[in-house]
Structures are given as structure tokens and as C-alpha cells.
Image 1 (cartoon, rainbow, N blue to C red):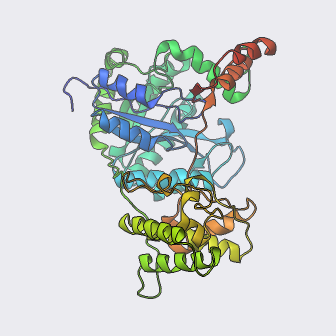
Image 2 (cartoon, rainbow, N blue to C red; image 1 turned 30 degrees about the vertical axis):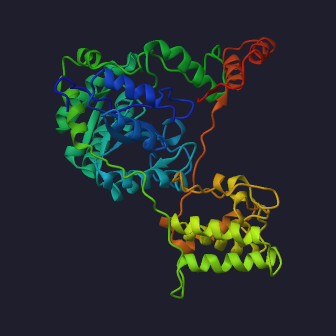
Image 3 (cartoon, rainbow, N blue to C red; image 1 turned 135 degrees about the vertical axis):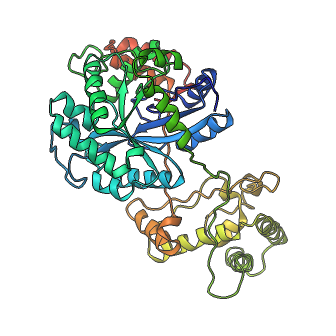
Length: 473
């Protein structure tokens, strides 16, 4: 690590804290490099959406990526779907950082369970889950919405002490820190004194963070509008959700050292934590499952057999030479690129759906250019008849994964997913997410609403804007 970079940001929200964080990962990594920071963490609200994107860019820039999450803690059980305390929406904030790959796996598990079991306004976990999956994790007490600061604000010192000791016990004394911030929020200064006193009493280390939500101080106004869009309010609404400070930006090490000059160990502990966080992703691996056969037949041989049978059915028992030649060529490329299992897996679950009377789409995208797909019934479009190119789908010159888009009836799609999970194992099946970006016109309309501008004026400005621009918010 660089000898001059004593401060590492450990509490930070990127654009993946949807409609809350306004930090773009590229800018974050560039700024961290300019500040000669050895590492930087992301801790998005309740999710790990940005983990891989952040990891890639940080490693490329020579900065250690620390993968974390600001989780929501249920006051009691995650299964209890009611507000059991005065905490907003029945949850408290808590920072978890992955110390190693075991910690990252535990964090993934916790975040998943937060959505599937604990969701109540927000994806929540509880102390029971954290106790079962605490290995490899470091915990920080978070902002004023964290449990320890919350009860200190209420004057409930015994309760705050009890909670701090509980987390210290769950995570281990070396993996739990009392978090203090210098964020311009009036209540924070008073609470910092109480937090430091509690830390000394309980022999828990303190760590300084800044709960970054945007890159520069001047971004605070734009971030405020982002919050208005999130909550469906306008900037003139006095009762809306708003931050009472413009200091939640990505501060330099010098600013942080100055802010915590009376308690320098809080800065040094950021680096100590960073040195202990070493998560490594293995990216770019081909993890395609192998289609299992009951006989000793190999996937390539079965694919060829099915394709030839399909060709006879689709194009008469004696198909034209152009079809036979095209099929041979495609099968040869599939064999060389070792994708026979992929085709057989897709063929298998489509065959299952058809047998069960689940409607399947005719196929779309580049897969429609494959005669093998047509012969297997994966697509219903004859690529020879319509002169569609196989190379758009699978090209030996460009080694990239083929992509077969399949549409199932929305009412029974879950049956197909269940079949695949049962056949290949729950741990071998994943669903993907798509993040929407707002076209410039839509963004202008949303900002106009948040600023309470007259609709006609906002509409006129929006129509002057080229719609090729896209803004992620």
C-alpha cells in the first residue's frame, strides 16, 4: 500500500444505490487514484449490484476493491412484517465488508435472504441470520440510522451498549467497529462524542467514514433532486426526505485527517481494515454446465443425431444439399467451440415446456440464424429460407458466448425455471438483472417535476433534447 495514503473510504453509495447514490464507478476509481488511495469500498443500500463492475475497474486502476453493503437490519425477526420500533420502515442500517471470499459468499447469502425472506419496505436481515453467516465479515455501526447511534440519540445508553456488545460477540472483537462521521449533520457531532465514549468503555475500535452519496460538494443539489425523484416529491415540499448537509461527498484524505485530528486512530483504522479485506474474483471463466447423458454417448454425437433427425422432419427425408452443407458447417463450429452441451440444455428445457403445454416463443435475436437451432426446435425460423447468418450467432473468429433468447408464457415461466434448477441444481442456476437507464428526455421531465416547473415548459425543453443521450439514475 502507498505510504502516504492513510485514509480509505469504507462507507460509500454508487449509482447502484438506485435513486439514492450518485457516484459513478468510473469517476470514483479515477478520483481514488488521484488521491493515491490504496483501496476503496462500495457499500450500496441492501444490494451488491455494482460489485463486479466496481471490482473490474478498481483492479484495472491498481486500487484494491473492498466489497461491502449497507444492509438493513430488522429490529426483531426478519419474518416479522410490521414496524416493531420507531426506526423508519422497521429497519436499521449496518455496514458489512467482506474480509475474504468466504465473507463475500456470506454477504451474497445475507443479501439474497434479505430479499426472499426479510423484505418489508426494504430488504432486511436479522441478528439470527448474521450470527449464522458472520464468518469473513467486518461490521461498522453505520450512520445515524444505525442501531447504536439511534439508541444513543434516544438517550437509551444501556440499549446501545447491549447492541454494540451483541455485534462484537457475533463478529468477533477484531471485526466490529464503532463508526464516527464528520458530515455536517448537527446531531452527528453530539453523537460522535457518545460513540467514542461507548467505544472506550467497551474496548471497541472506532473508524471514520463519510457516508459518501455524491462525488463533489457541488453535486449536493443534483443529489437532492435525485431524492425528490425517488420519493415522488418536489423540492418545495417541506416534509420530504432530504439530507441536512452538503458534506456527503468523496472527501480527500487531507480533509478526513483534518476532520478527525483529535482522534487519528479513526483514520488509521480505515487503512487497517483495508489491509485485511482481500476478496478476489475469478472473472472470464467458462462455467457452462455439461449436459448429462445416461448412455456413454458424447454431447457432440447426440447433438448431431438430433440435428439430422430434425432436418429430416423439417425439410423432408432428403433435404437439399444447401441444408446438409450448412448443418455440417454449423455442427463443426459448435464442436470446435465446445458448445454442444449448451445447445442440448436449451433443447432439453424447451422440449420439457412443449411436453407440458407451456407456450414457447418462435425465437428471436441472433439464434434465429442457426440451422441447428431450427432443427432442434429451439427456433421456428428457417435461416436458409430467409438468408440469416450463423456467424452473427456463433463466430469462431470471435470467442464469445452464444446467446439464445427464449420466450415462455409469463404465467408458467416459473415451471421451466424450477425444472432447470431441479435438473442442474439450485446452485447452478441464476437469474440476471437489467438496469434501466433513462433517456435524456425522460430525465429532464423527472427533474422538471422535482423542481416543480410548469409541465408545458418542461415538455418544450425535453422535446429540444436529442433522445440518443442516456442518463443512469
